[in-house]
Image (cartoon, rainbow, N blue to C red; front, top):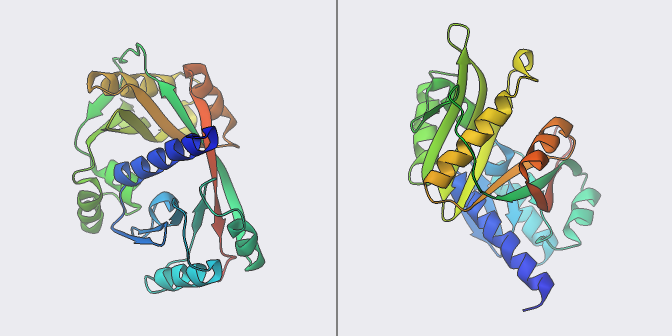
Length: 253
């Protein structure tokens, strides 16, 4: 197998992993593209994702996707990696779409992380985690319902938090252990508590939990303009493997 084909297969493997670790309420495969909708929240779970070669005309496919999301009262957002047809981004630009959020997908071989004592890890989400996962307000019955659907059967899910002041949640991270990977999501430190090493503690803990569960590698996604997060992950040894960006319709469409 040619090197470029091998890389594409590895990218496709990680894309399929991301669909399983961050599932959508609705998912449809359409001529090599994966259409995902979750009623709002993360764009990863509310977008069109080309992952396989296809046979239909691009304009026909784009129109199908636009109609699919229109029926759900949502904009058609395209998430493009190097697996997408090379001419797709240009076509979308011609239709008024705007490229946003260039993002690195980074991977790491997990070695010997150490859990931090100040980080609590739960296997079941508290209300603030339901809000993070679904975009619904904390305590929302709809949020609980959607989170239950999204998280059911995705693997071993871990919710890491640092609690202070009352207690108040001041740093978070989430991971899903599936196959040989620990996938990291929702890393965040409240602005007033940054530069204290809390993100490092949360990440070390999630990697340690993943290693205990049998994961050999970790994967995460970080926007290229998030300089602080990029620096932290590179210090851990994460390296960029591939990139993606969103193509979003102009406001009002």
